[in-house]
Image (cartoon, rainbow, N blue to C red; front, top):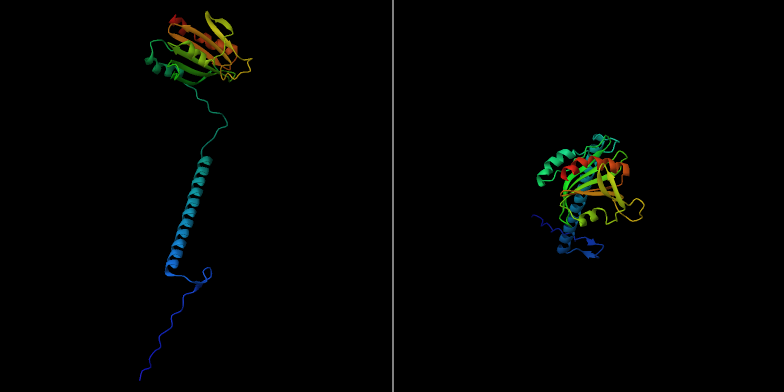
Length: 220
């Protein structure tokens, strides 16, 4: 006669120390879901760190491979070429001063003032002494436009350069913040108003003013 097997007793669920009792099925499911979420978050952070490290390594490689020079880069703009393109905007001849060696142009463009609506031909120059002179040729300009360029400073006299009379603005001794208008010259010819301003020496201003005489004479 076969012996009847006794049913095995089920092992009671473990007691969770934090709870002092076994977990309910709902608590078990919530714990597993939370653990799964934390695992995914750790994986995401690790992936971000690895991606950031790879990007930094790529940047380092590029920096090491790109040749560098200790010589500062300076643009040298072809003012004549830009003026030729801009000339379609006006019948007045745009100034393209011919300057001695050592002068460099770092900007050339037509600019329109948002305040006065005045359009001006602008060229920025670096002088042989590494100072700045901005040349503005205002087209049908007005006194307000001129005053704005010169930071509303007061004229200090006049000077004649190669037969052209200029109004002088010498603010080099001023303690006011006048920006680039440390020294300035203005004159009018035809429909153009010429303004020179910057930080260069009076002699360098005279050089640029002299180079503008052919354009000025052509508009008289």
